Image (cartoon, rainbow, N blue to C red; front, side, top):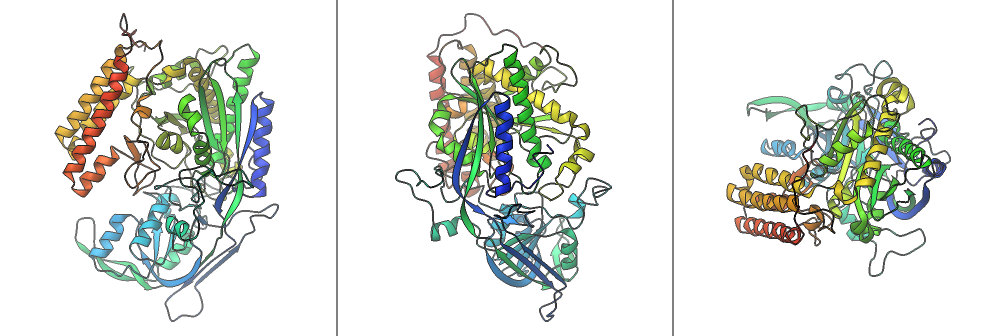
Length: 632
């Protein structure tokens, strides 16, 4: 961890490449075959940032003056200043308007109160949604710029003692982050839906990078900048009072502006082609199939927790797997470990690699395990594709039976001995292209319990990690052992990693729950189809070639309406919040639009697709005896 975090790891910079070689070296020493996947992608890095705040429009002398210069090609480059990747470049000055958390409801409340939004610079709090969605809404409602800050009650002194006396953010610490169009398509914005090439090569035949007008339309059109809570408080103190309704609808006088406080905001952040590097390690299996775990190697600054903790977890897992190989063990399915680049800019490294290997992955990849900012405590958690819960419980149970195993072990069974239900992964990390573009099963794991305000700041470093998040690295070691066990079990199980009947039962339940908004008749029809599939899959023998896994079988290869990159018809990231998920997204769209005909057509289509998958399972021989009962 200390070697990894010696210098910043911003994608596309020389100091990022230093970490690339460190990761490759450790993998090679563990016996993995290492390949470096270089790609030329569009990145957003700043050269100059400036924020000048004025008490009112008549005052010539700024109350606050912040100027940052940055050279991404310097060696060392130093810490990247407070920056929102993919912000539009430009110089704007306008009155400030407090838009709360910058959610649609916040803007709608201001609009209903007839408060001027158009032509202002909005100031919004981080939290409750993806920062890029806040910028999109600011654009939609006519703002000319956006400032983002962390409210101390959410991420600062309101949570507890601040650094160094405690783990929470001081008023001058600033969260960086991308504001790119992740909800429409992640990855390199100049190559939507197809892979970016190696440096010096053209993109694939028949494809061209988006440029000029098309690229400008796809990316943010107004400047955006994050600031510290101290600066935000000074700006908010100069806002005029307006009458707006509170949560109960009662009118109240609040200081939200617009004005008289104003801000001059300048962003010089060219969007340039730069080289990124994914590191892929392989441990060859004796049979077909691949299981894979991945984490992003880049960081906004030093990134000890996000995502150095995931990098270290995977490297320790590689060393544990190497020790098993030395003792005579051989994996059945090939094990791959991926260290993605440019995740922080918008899942770029993983998305471009997945798009470039889509055909092979669709045929061979049986599981992708994601480990992002994975360690901040001892408590194991996971979200993932329904149908993987039995595998996960087995992997964690098998972990305890490894010769010489000792210490704490994570579990995935309830107190009653049943499987815990997965939350559905939305987006915001590298599982997205596997899950939402290719329809492959994924698990996203974490070890939580300790919290702090270090996210995307300059003090997400080794000192913060060792003092507050994981003193002694005990939980990093637990995470590494767990990852090794999950990969070992997955390699042995192959196609049986995924329980098709368990997945179908789970989706029957979720369909029934959707009846409140979809309609009982439509929901019951979908649930019945899933239950038929579950029964057929449960009764079929699994020692023969099987139909495609449920999510591949229900994949929409043409993409979802208005979101063609997303092909998973059962759930997608929520476009308003960015990170969360919504089930049956096409049905939700038609319900929101009030189109009952299109809703019924979509329901019929999904039922037909489920029944077609059911027919494929029905062609298999049935079990001669029931499955053995699950052991507690």
